[in-house]
Image 1 (cartoon, rainbow, N blue to C red):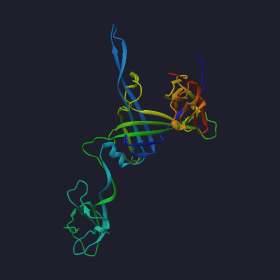
Image 2: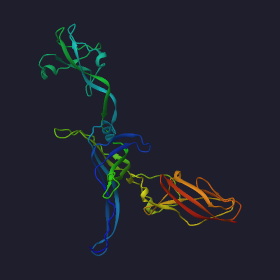
Image 3: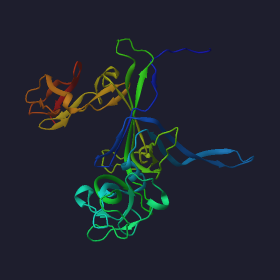
Length: 374
């Protein structure tokens, strides 16, 4: 090999650990599973060729039609997810087929609503009816598939029975505990927030605690689901639940300091996060103050802003982990617990120190302070 060879710690990941589906903005959890067998995310873009000149070569490429999508297979059954996938209805309390053993009396069979509930029409049927099978007799479709209307007193009409014999009567009631999803003809899948977690391992870890070092978290803030709400069951595979869809671009409308640039005007599709098990403390290299020495006139104030150096990047620290002090004082000049530097009526030179402390991790950074007469 020509050139230097480098050895380093690798991040390795395999399998999907969990999926959480929530309402966008509010965060209310709609669905969760950690029994996934597939969680594949794809990102694509159309590379638009611009050609011109002799031979019509490519003189530029302008990307368009950016797309991020995900396909998840969950080995558990979820009716709720089928509702979100189609924009359908989901809830509890639906017509459910039940049965009761009833003794014939007065030449008919009468349903007792106290046993299973009041008879109602089943899904797709125009009225309440019942099927009848005689206990101890052979069941046939031609004989037992006949429907019998149920009158206002819950008695079957038109049935021929022997008083004193017991019959199994099948009918529908509104069962409060029956969960249902109704897929509407006008299918319009929901827009949800999807959070996927993948375990991350290292090729080098020698502390005796295994090789997992963190998690890959993939967040689709706004995902339009794909209406994949079918049922796939056969002799060799179980019924699964699908969570699939396409990311919708969103823009954070929060006003931020500065005027921005061409590179930060696009909306976001998907976020990838690597979250270390130890919080990433080993990646923090120190605390710095950007901008050099601080100079401010008498009787004024200035907010001190320190930054953590994390793997070569500047990151604003959590204010809860910061403390401040005037290590070399200037008469009348002080710094608050939030880092607000306030000068007094005396000019001079001093030093303020910001300190970041999180558990056993601690970094301090001094900054020169000059108070001027004007």
